Image (cartoon, protein in one colour):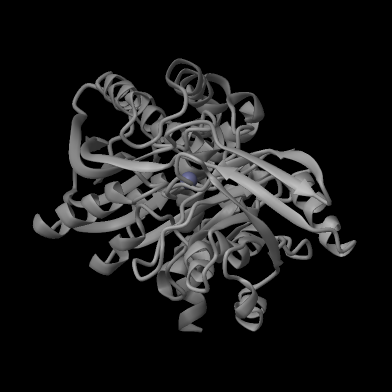
Length: 452
Ligand SMILES: [Zn+2]
């Protein structure tokens, strides 16, 4: 009875709060869907700056662009947080020619990020097709002197495509050294995608220093299928591989930060971000220009609606996520040095597609609290908040007590373009991008207003 009374007494208050929140979130949505600037900012970043490989001139141009945009908000402090970066360069035009039963065929390839080039003459060798590391181990005596073709495919039965990416990503990351251990002279991989075109998809790899640093490249699915069918038909395959990747001297990059001081808990920080760097092959529109401009949109919207945050809100355009992670590392390091209190961190780094939900590193009270906001968000497209991944640039903040959160858009088209030349502005839909920003802004508003 007592409990019932309590519910009765509290419920009008609750509905007033809900009503107030739903009205404010409607204002957020209307502002973004009619006057949001994320799409125009993305056009600037993609078309006026372009590809933003760590350490490149365009990366610095992008940093200046971020600073200029943040400087437009009075009372918001703009910080360029310095981080040391390793500079990998592609070094030339990647090329591969396959010879299948005496017939030559050009492969559309891209060297893997951080891979070392094939030398002045390139590498020419017979190819062995390997589907998995288990198979590599079984056939280790056949690897010496060969180019290993890792043909691990996306599992098409997985509707959440990041699981398919997770399962095949290890061939890109550690495949070259695993093959070099048994004497391979090069590696080519089937790109991590289910795109129906033939674009190759690059991405980071890392060498194990105990083995030779052999060249490594990715090819698109049409080429990978042709090679596979040559093997099915018992035709001999060899490849001439020419890549030129190498490191040049270390340099300096920056996390570009807009800091908007909180009125009640200025010492408690809410971080919202994406990464400003991209691969060199395309404009980095979905990965991760979209996450950058959506994060900027959160600030632009709350600011223009006259909102006064209770906690300190930081928008961070992270440096060097793709091939080093120096920006995320530096942000965490500084937070530790300054003994900062990080309440919540949200990253958008899964493309500018239709919003579906959020995932957080919690399975308890905070998750329940955030899930109670779903009725306020679902008219804008968010129907789920679950325990799950966050974002490479912010994940370390959980070590210092933050709840870390990843924005989850629809994942069906992300890997069509991810790290490929097709990741351009034209492949981003304005409405989808803006709706993502609506949900991010609404969530930040609720987290700021009610705490965690
Ligand atoms: Zn990314």
